[in-house]
Length: 86
Image (tube, rainbow, N blue to C red):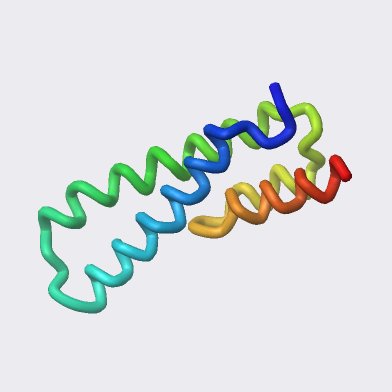
């Protein structure tokens, strides 16, 4: 697997954007259809980021740990992977 797979980048951004949408929905109208659509999307993106990060050989224990941070974990893991590879 490559150091920064495209799928990990996409999932990290989807995770962050979906969390922002969920929090904005919670702070404003709290519409059930938005929560029903974006909630599972966020959950799937989060799980994908965590599993993909754990499968990377170049990911150290700290990189794997930061992948568990909701919302920003995927981006933090990508940043650590970029610095680890040079």
